[in-house]
Length: 110
Ligand SMILES: [Zn+2]
Image (tube, rainbow, N blue to C red):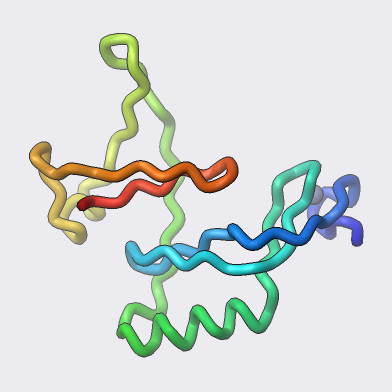
């Protein structure tokens, strides 16, 4: 199947699409474009996630933030927006777990 976004890539079946809702991350099945990386979760999978999210009382408010990385002391630094910091009660003492899922990074406070 051709990608409806870029119309160049081919959609490949994947099972590691991340849907993030209010700090919860759901891994769902769907298609991913091999050219632009566009992701298309299966309709039934999205419905399943929405149902779970409603049960947890975290629907709606899917959150996607765009941030630049900056350099500090030779390492890349990701700045956490203040509202997320408050919501997730983060501080400089917070330990985080970084998981690589495909081309994505999932950062979870532990
Ligand atoms: Zn594409």
